[in-house]
Image (cartoon, rainbow, N blue to C red; front, side):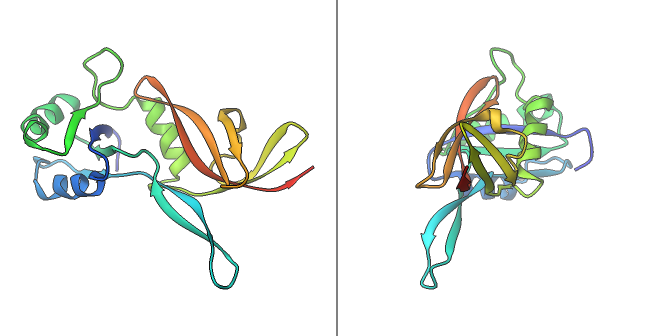
Length: 182
């Protein structure tokens, strides 16, 4: 999407994320603007298949959240979606930034998420090594972001990453495969 564009975030009931995203597309609320609802996903280790190869599956990166990418400015978005949100049984609320009336995800946060998702709406797994008491990520979206990692679970092949979303810190589990310990 061409600049300027915005990301809005809706907090929805658990397990309704995909349905809400599909309903938004069908509701024709765009008013001539481009409108793309999505639920960011992450790739996670699932186990081994019959050939003893690793199997990865996708899960929601932010359960209970639906993101909307659009070129619709905040005022028009709030006007177009207010009745829809009020009448929906699945949407709890439209998130606001901090204690302000801003509803668009701030540019820095949007760019950070876009960098991690690499434009695919899915966070791929990262691969790294442990050197002493340091983690070095060799490939994947977490390269250079070792400081954001708060905890590693080598058995489930996940890392807990702390990031900021709409003015508050959120912990997110992402796939991280540690291939060796030096």
